[in-house]
Image (cartoon, rainbow, N blue to C red; front, side, top):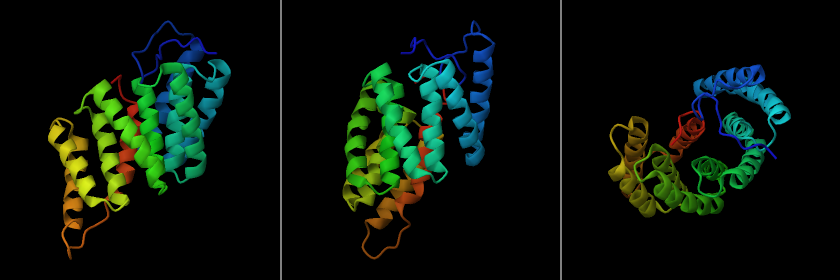
Length: 233
């Protein structure tokens, strides 16, 4: 079992410069890999994160806070890079480990749970996605607040799931409510919510052709990936 110390890498918690040389090297590699992921260089991100995860597990342990962050980012990179089955399996394992280490409603656990829900949605496993989104949305609302970027990401995912399942009316309700709670300083989420709402409104008008809200799915996963690179919620 890991010492469960506080994560100290850029993208998780403030850097603790008391770490040794090995920690500094892992931290640098984590920053580089996260940059690949952020820039959409998914093949390079996967290769870098796979190598980094092996070393983190060996040096820090499987349930170390930093190891879990790297593991979660690798799972997202795999899904985004087209390796859905492998990424989904790793993501589910990562969620189970975060539940043990952090607890059920810790922000990092909720990040992983949202990512699993998004993966189910992208794969068309809508009942599983709906069940998870319906769980994590109120949890993030309680822990982070209704207007937090991560909460808004989950609410968008929930709306997209209803839309994919053919329940446009419920999707409209979910996305409209999220947009009403959205602080305009949260630019990325505000734009996604507005665009998705316009698509849903078009789909709700008989005879009016509209693009599929699923085109917002990958952007929603990008936000999930960013959750482990950004500062503490």
